[in-house]
Image (cartoon, rainbow, N blue to C red; front, side):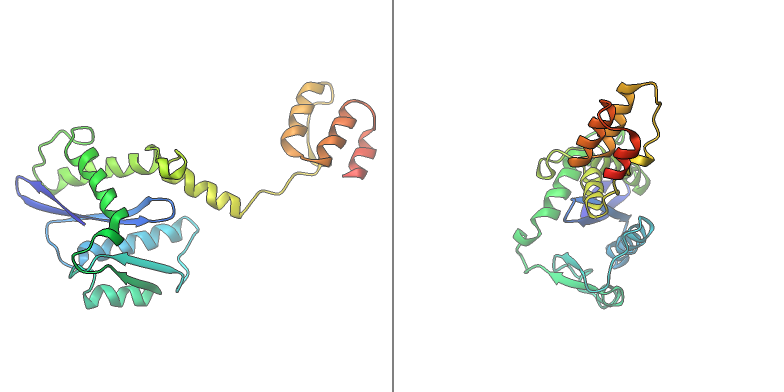
Length: 219
């Protein structure tokens, strides 16, 4: 988590980051550094993953953090254990194994807190910080291009990953519904739905070399 100065005092903002896609899954802002500062976004992240249809499998998730008292507290570690999340703590006075999170917080300070893009500023209270943070997280996840992700957004990168795990089945040629009198449109539809040898069969059918019954039989 990090500190944000306001007219009413410091506001503390904590983030939960998915290392694979660099996506900010959850965040939380409070005026105290109690354990709820870091525990609440973990609960939100777990709920969000379940809502998206990708629930966390007990024993397969590692929760890494620094050695702050909030992350080493009994309440927080008990919550991780109850959710089947394996804890990981960085060494004291060493930020090298927490570089990714430090980088994201640096971007947050540079792109959000120290600009007026997501808030008019100066920040008067926690509500101002929450408003700016919500706008920045939405932009970071959905529109900001990341060079480490092949110049995709975190949402695009994650969506592509799940799409690759669950590819859509190819539609049989017999199920392609196209206008019989528009051969160009029929060709486009066939090219989008078939591949390899099946594309050759579709081309032969469209060229009149074989009839539909033969094409269906061959596929």
